[in-house]
Amino acid sequence: MIEELWTGLLELSGQFIVPDWAALVALIPIALAGLVFLYLTWTVYRFATAGPRTRGVQRVAPITPPGIHMPGPSFAPVLAAFGAFMLLFGLFSGGIWLWIGVIVLVITLLYWGREAIRDYDHVAHPAGAVAPELPPGALPAPTDGTPPPGVHVPPPSFRPLLVSVGFTMLVGGMIVGGWALLFGIIAMALVLLGWLRDSRREYNAVAEADRTGHLDMGGSPSWPKATFAALGVLLVAGIVLTTGVLTGSGDGTAAPSGGPVASGDAGGGTGGGATPGPTLPAADASLTAENLEYLEASITVPAGKPFKLTLDNRDQVPHNVEIKDAAGTSLFKGEIFSGPAVKVYDVPALAAGQYTFVCTVHPNMTGTVTAQ
Image (cartoon, rainbow, N blue to C red; front, side):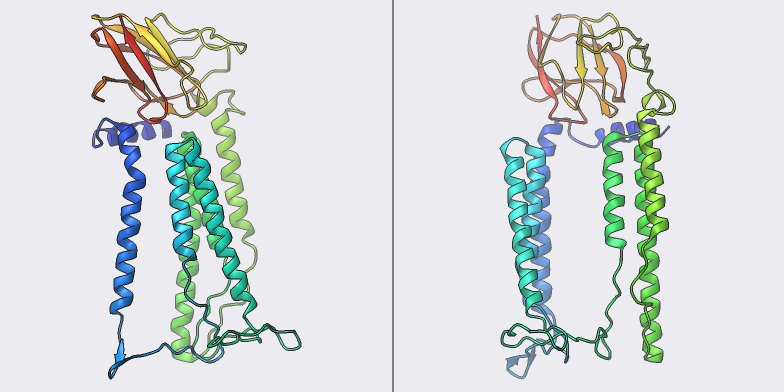
C-alpha cells in the first residue's frame, strides 16, 4: 500500500511539472541560490532597520551584560551555507563537480571550526587556570556554571542529534521506498514531536521565571534511551520488511531471485549474466535498471509501427521509461513501478531516427533509442 501511495504521488506530481525532468533538476541549484540570496537580503534589511538605531546623532553601541562573553561577527555560517550549496550542486551535476562540492564544504567547515576554537580560547577559564589574553572589548564568561540574573540559557539537548537521525531515516526511506518510507516518516514525526514537547516545557519554565524570579530547567538531560530504542526498532523493521528477510521477497512484492516475478502485465524467467534473473517476456526491445542506471546504453526498435518495450527493474526503488525526441518533447511515458519486477510497455509508433530514453524519477538514467 505504501509503495502504491508513493508511486501515485510521483505520477501526480509529474502532471504539474514540465516533462523535461533533466532541465528541471538543473534549475534546482539556481532556485536554491535565489532563495539564499533573498533570505540574506531580508536579513541585512532587518538588521539595518532594527531600532533603536540612534540616540541623538550617534549610533548606539550594543552593550553586553556583565559576565557574558559575546563572540564577534563571523562569515563562517555564510561560507558553510555556500559549501552546502556546492555539495548539493555536485550531487545533481555529478562528475568532478561532486568532488569540488565535497572539498568546498570541508574547507568551509574547517574554517568555522577554527573560528570556534579561537573564540573558545578567548573565554576565561575557571579560577587557577591560565587564561589566554582577551581581545579588546571581550568579556569573560561566568565560571560558576550559572548565567547572570535575567539571562535565560537553555539547557543542553539531544534533540538536534535525534532530528538529524530521523531526517536521515526519512531521506533513506524516500530513496528505498516501501516500508522504509513509512518508518522514516514515523521516525521524523517522533523526533519532531519530542523537540516540540521540550520547547514547550522550556517556554513554560521561562514564563514561570517571569513570575517567580526562579528558573529551574532540571540540569543536564539524561540520555534519551527510549527514543534511541524506538528509532532503532523502526530502522531494523524497515530494513527487515524492505529487504524481505522474513518474507523472502523485498517489500513483500517480489519473488526470490531466479523465481517468477509478476508485476502488471509481466511474468518471470532467466536473465543474462552470472546471476539468474527473471525470464523477460517477448518484446521488441528490453532495458534493465540496476543500481540506479540502465545497463543498456542504446536499444533498437522497429520504425513506423507500435512495439513492445520491456523494463526489468532490479532495484527496490521506482523506475520507468520515457522516450523523448531531439527537442526534448515527451513521446511516451511508461508507468512508474518499484522492483524487483518486470513490466512490458506498449509504445506507439516512432518515425525512423534517433531518440532519447530516460527514467522520469532519475534523470541521470538515460540512453539512445534508434528506430529503423
